[in-house]
View (spheres, rainbow, N blue to C red):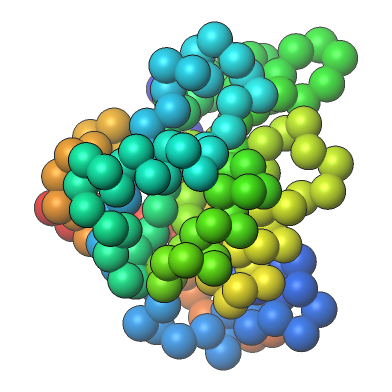
Length: 181
C-alpha cells in the first residue's frame, strides 16, 4: 500500500507568532499514545469526527488522558490511501478529523503534547473554519497528519516519538513518527 508522508505541524503553521520547528522544545515531541477509534463511524460517514463523547468514553474505559500524551484519531482511512476515496468524492473533500468541540475540550481540560490523525488534516474536511487547527496549534501543541498503523498500537502502552529535522524558521514538514511499545 502506498504511504503518504507524515506531516508534523507546529504552532506557526496557523498561528502568526506560534513556535517554529527550530524553537520547539524536544520534550514536546515525545509522549504516551492515546488512540481514539472512530473507524466504525467513519466507515458510514466520511465527515465523522472525534467528539467530546469519544474522549470521555475513552477515559471511562482507560482512565484520564495522561499528561504529555498524543491523542491520535484512528478512522481506518489509511486503508483508502492510493484511492480517490481518501480525499472524498468527485465534488468535494470528505474525510474525518477532530471536531472543534473535541479540540477545545482537549486543550482546556488536558495537558497534552499533541494530536494526530490518519487523514489529511486535523480538521474534518467539511469545516470551513479550521477550528481544530486553531485550537491545537494556538495552544502550542503539535499536530501530525497521515499517521499510519494506529490500529497496531490500539490498546497498548505506546510512546510516540516525533522525528523531524530542525528546519530554521519552519512551521512544519515531513516527519518520521515512531511508536515504541
